[in-house]
Length: 303
Image 1 (cartoon, one colour):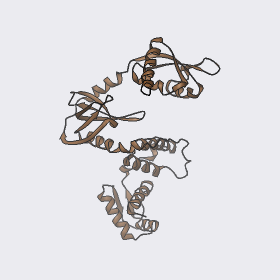
Image 2: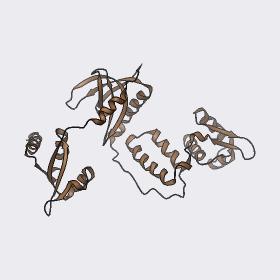
Image 3: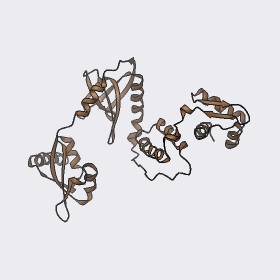
Image 4: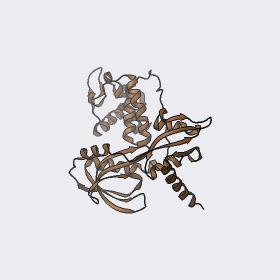
């Protein structure tokens, strides 16, 4: 077993037990007592709150402050947390999340049943590429340091930005950075996949009252339009997940009628176009015409 693996295993064991002797650790990992002593020194130097207990029943323990009080959480609670973190781990791809998961796993009884819920996400290659940007932004937020980067908007226009970073936001499939742009002198939201040449500056900043901006963001809603569309049974589940069963009604033996609200812009068109021939917008007529023009522009790209 590699030293790093052994050190992690020691932490996991100490999270479950009060005190473990040097002899027990040495026998478990098939190493000498001197090796275990060096491991404990390494953990202490890494700010892991290890303490030693002298005497016949002595050994090593980990400070209670480092543990979550298991009396406050049932096995079911811990399994629910693990389920949620399991999903976050695949979104965040974060070493910190992985360590947190191992800590909680150490508190769950080995006799408890395996979680009845499992989350799966596509392992997109681009998600791993964005990890470094995500980590740099997070570090800048915590250290209150300015960041600069090239930003390419949806129209392909490239601008250089200097930003006070305040918050990372994950929405559906994408990460966003919220902050105060010193170029625009306004709060702005930047999609991480559109950020290039990110640099964390040595300069720090005094935080503005971002809570007021968050209240504004919460109250803001894009302009929506109510539409009615005929959909095939094969995509019914997509509409139930997003709009609920009340949005669907029977129309004919092979079609359903969906009444939904979509953004009054290209984002709404893109959402509807993804369903191809399984969907036909029927009302209102003005929206049907706008959607038709959008589709014709797509067709013209290939004509």
